[in-house]
Image (cartoon, rainbow, N blue to C red; front, top):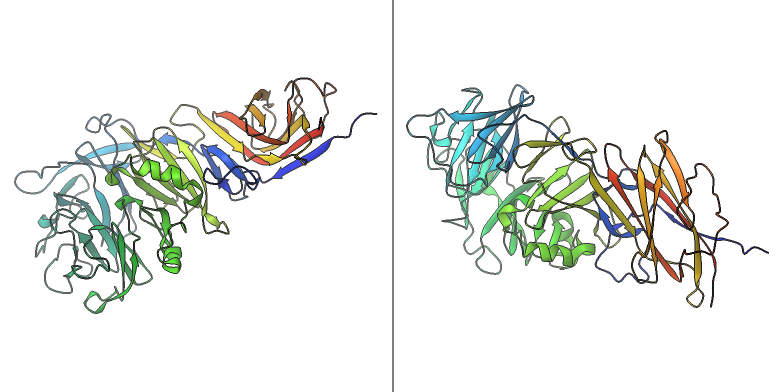
Length: 513
């Protein structure tokens, strides 16, 4: 009599995201041990990320230089302009044309000595700040093809710092010079980014305020009337920032600072940033104070730490995509981007995370039209298609190890069935292995071009393709392998269509004791 098959199911595979931190023994099977070029969609399915299409034609001045700064200016009449910087130039994106902005002020054009600008805007004016560089403005009321020094704006008074971090919040510009004076925050008058003395402008000196002695300002953020001043090792939280003259120190986060200016993102309900201990959120950090492992990146902690050591903080970039509900953090030297899901927080407070390997973006901006632009080498990319420019990219998804029932009896693998969504004319490489020995076997399954929603099974040789039902290959004992635990992996070349995983079913029969 034929031995009855035993089914094992992984519903919503990869729902908890990647976990490279914990031991694979007894790990929840909703974790993934690897998920490259993946996202977790709004239905909780792990699937392929989108790629990026070129948003502009070539620009001679930009050449092959990296687009290292992106920003969106919303003018007072609602007109929207996307601005960029790279290769020592400033640019305006109009349709698919990237136009170089020329200097429109008086005298000698300012020297642009680096490309690490931070973009802010106020009252219809875009402002670019960068360490040891004169702050520059794009003022479309004066000209849509030129830029000038902020000091050349009509009505300019005082001295604007050569700041490296800046923030537009509560009707004024806040900035800090992180080179000469690393402990003073300066702020402009209300609605007048060119006024830096008189009115309600002023400065906030932090010497003697840092709870653990000296620190240096790295970045600024605002939320619910609070001003957040991120030092490298500490964070200061001031309340009443709507009226700077009466704001007071409300809280401090000792031992928790920010190490990368451009890692700071306001999600509307929280502030996310990169600290020495990993990716953290202000809301959770305020609750836990200095708890070192209460981080969004807890499940990939060691990996994040290894990448931090390779990077300059100036090069680390991030983005928050409201539409797709993810926070991106990119490490250019390591050529990897982490994608943190912001919809669901796991019970331990960590976030679900996947990785995007390859050449990362050098800047980001999420714009009013709900599009995400990405700074690339020689162009601006738009997160949209399932191609990287015109190239395919590889998606990897490997499950956690799953117990097959008995530690004293092996199970012989008979079949794997994966329910896929959105697959068209796609080859799927299926891999599997036993007892923590890696992925020892593989098979390629071709999905029909007519399949919009497909369910396929692989028999022991991986020769079958089935839709809508489960088929058991009669050659059940040949070459499939056996063990007490199993890991399953899927790989696909993404070439214009998405791949998402709904469910994985594994069928085995009893083997030797």
